[in-house]
Image 1 (cartoon, rainbow, N blue to C red):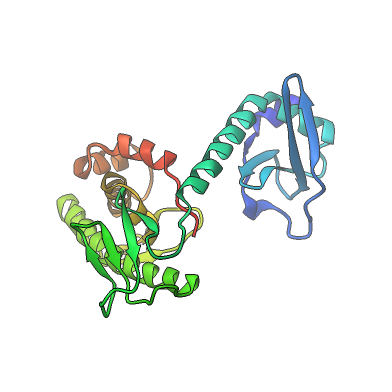
Image 2 (cartoon, rainbow, N blue to C red):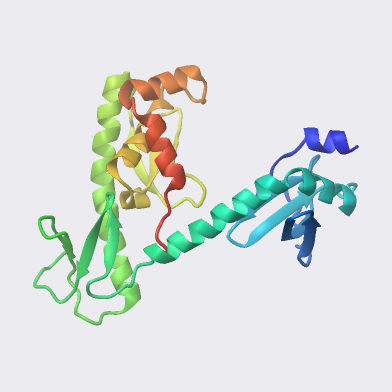
Length: 260
């Protein structure tokens, strides 16, 4: 049975969890020098799954699998779990470092650099002073945080629409495919998506990242209009329009969005 469980190990898919199986109280796993808490949830699935997020370690297991068998899987995967927990801590620290202090003079990550948000300026709409690295907002000093966030998001979405559409159509022309539309997304788990009918959606907060990362994500989704898979021909299409995709993908995996 243990051999079967290890062969079927995969990453947890929340969609497979049974809706009537509430999370249990955290358990403590100790194996040699490895020690961590985890939450066990019974689910309709054939294997033991492990998911690690900002709330900790979550294990989803079939009802017929004993706690001892679950912990044997954890023992076999303990090094991986500990590495992921360490990465999680690093990510949380980075998020705190990037946290935006929503007031006049706040620093906003933008295209790999920083913009200072300026209030109380004589402008009727959000205006970028690129030479000074400032975004002037048509708000009085001391405006509510929510209002400041809304104006900043509206401006970023406007910039994203223009930049994403331009680059997507340039890449599409080089690949000989057609982009019917480029929309914005706020998805929690993906940076972009593409459908066979030529529609592309890209996360507007990609604008926080450096241009090479943005270019990679756009090239990735446009390449799907030629190959709706991740096979060799797909990656050849990505390379055709963005040869440095490997470096950009590695940078994206390490990138952290600032909390809003």
